[in-house]
Length: 178
Image 1: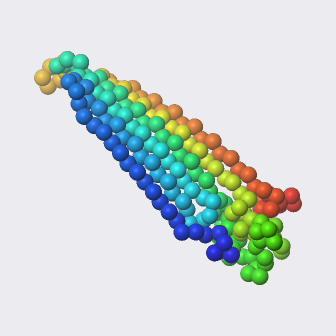
Image 2: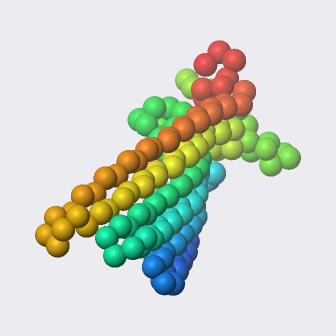
């Protein structure tokens, strides 16, 4: 059963950034993308993060700037807790001689004490958490005297998390009597 629910994990990550200045303006932009497939089939994590910093020297005493950092994470997972709906846990509990697929190659709903099988749970569960976040900050810095500086900042954070769960009728949690 373990061979039916696990896979070789795979990870890709790409980063890029640009920075520079032009006159009194300096800037920095960066992005990171992460694509990670877990060792459990049908589970993955996708993340995109961007950062932008812009600073402007208004005159020899006044400087202002803004920083923006949006990100989005999509995490598709399986039941991973120590419960029967977890493909890894159920793979260790289910009888080894139970058929996993029918003649068409579709996962069977299982037999025995618990409904579903490790394979039907991997194929039939869809648990997705999507998180969107925006961090932002603006500042102003004023050099009042040679050794005296006034700086003020204001920042905000926006976070939204959206979770979905679907268990088909052939899974342990989605079976009509489960």
